[in-house]
Each structure stands twice: as C-alpha cells, then as structure tokens.
Amino acid sequence: MLDPMGPSESSKRFGNTSLPMPTLGFGAATLGNLYRAMTDAEADSTLDAALNAGINYFDTAPHYGFGLSESRLGSQLAAKREQLIISSKVGRLLVPTTSSDSIRHGFVDTPALEPVFDYSYDAVMRSFESSLQRLKTNYIDILFAHDLGSLTHGEQHAQHFREFFEGGYRAMNELRAAGVVKAIGLGTNEWEVCEQALAHGDFDGFLLAGRYSLLEQSPCDSFFPLCKKRGVSIISGGPFNSGILASGVSGAGPFYYNYEPAPLHIIERVKQLEIICAEFSVPLPAAALQFPGAHPQVCSVIAGLASPAQVEQAIIWMNYSIPQEFWQRLRERNLLHPDAPTPF
Image (tube, rainbow, N blue to C red; front, top):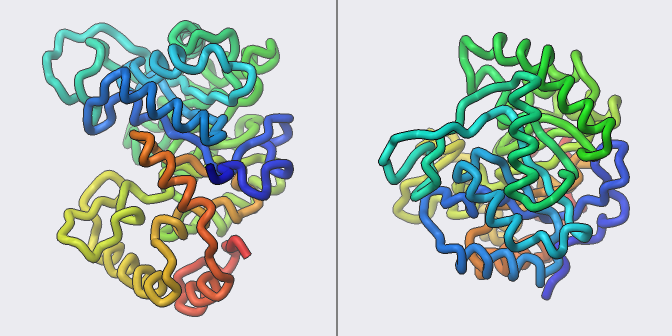
C-alpha cells in the first residue's frame, strides 16, 4: 500500500504542539451518513481500510450524523487510540427532536437529535464530555469551535462570536491547560473569521474547509502570512471544493462547488485546469489533493472517504507523480496565486 504520510511526515506539526500531522487525513463526516446512508459494517470496513493504509488522523464532529460519526469512530478506533490523532468540535449541542424526516442537514437516517448552535462555556463543556463518551476516549487531540463566521450565521455572527469569546473559548483554554485537549482552534469554511479570532485569542491552528484549493487561494493575501507570524497551522479540508475538482466538468453534471451548483466562472476555471491536466496526463483529483499541502502553513489535507475503494483511490492520488512542468503551466496561465507554493 502506498504511503499516506508522504515525505513531510517528520516536519509538519500542528502549531507549536508535538502532534505529528500526516499528509493525508480522514474526514469522517461520511461516517455520519452524509448524503447517503451506510451500514455499520460499511463504516467499519472503510475505517479498517484507512488504518491498514497507515492513515492515523481522523476528523469528526457531533454535527456529523448527530453523534453517529463519533460513535462509529469510537467503536472501531478505541483499541488503537494511542496511535491515532483525533479532532472533534464544539459549538453545537445535540437535543432531542420529534422530526421524522429521513434527511436532515444533509445527513440520512440519523439518531433523533437536532444540532443547536451554542458557543457558551457550559455548552462547550457539555459537548466535549458527550464527545468523549461517543469516542470512547478520555482526551481529544485537537478541539475546534465549529462553524463560526458571518457566512454561516449572517446577522447573528457578532452575537455568536461574542458568546464564544466570553464563554466557549475560556472552556477550550481550560481543557487545553488540563491536558485533556492537546490543541485548540476553529473549524470553518471562512478564513476571515479565523483571522478575526487571532486578534482575540491564542490558537494552535485552524481547520479550513474549501478555502485553499486549486480554485481558491485568497488566504495567501493576509491570512496565511498572519498564521506564519503567529506559529499557527492549517488543516486543509474540502480539497475537491464539494466535488467539482474530483469529477471535473467534462461530464453531464450537475457540478457542485461550495455545496451548491457551480457558477459559470468556476466551471470555466475547472475547464482550464482540465486542459492542462490532459496535456500532462495528470488526474485532476490528484492535483487537487496534493496542492494544498505544499503550503508551509498547511500541515495536513483531509478528504471525506466513504468506502475502502475511496481510501485506496485517495492514497493513489496523493502519491501520484506530477511533473514540475505541470505546476509551472498552471502559474503561467494565472491559475495560481503568485504566493501559492507548489509541490515542487
């Protein structure tokens, strides 16, 4: 089996911690029945494939299947806990619901619980304790505050941001000081709120989903330089931008970007990427998966994996040999930010 750790295994840590981050991590929203239901047996076989391939970092959240993702991870990984890095999240409490809808918030056939945003001190502590029980562990390596930001909360962003720094952030700091959490940060798809948070608190790093990819490199302008100055790491999630960088746009579609049908300018940009990929015989998903990790602030790239075949395919893509000339051509065509490093 190919090596998911990659050549930078020994050099990438999460912030100033001693946590060694692998090149490729496992995004476990899929284990919460994201978009489609999977059986416990399918979840177990997928996790077995990841473990057998050497993947040792798993990212989850109470929101993913309303506890289902964490529970499946806990059942399968508890015996190997000391060998693994696990991140989870706070910011939502799971409360009973009477809804009979089979699909809620994108998750299918889940427990009868509803996620409610709550960034207060007590809610963060309660959420953390519940995660420990589901994960069958007494510590979590990285704890993220989940989905802060104005794009998520609109006019309520200021209220949630204030609630977090008056309560939830203090709780996370206490958990880190007590050693039951090794590192803290934000997990979000908005780099702007991460930059805002750095003006108010001390974070080890951030999980940034979909905002640093072959289609988007705006964090290079101000956010990544600030992270370098502060010694803060980035875990890059959503490297395929909701699928369009995995599927390409040469088929019939529909094509999804940022969880919605892709706008025309994104489709046109993907077409340009596909032309260069064809010229160099490079699979577009391989380039998409490898690109984020070339930035020195990015310590790991996580992909959502829903089957043993997807685990194997992700490792093949991560280890695919891409010539330096490919990346040079992207730069010549102005498809990369001037400050965005490439794998060569």
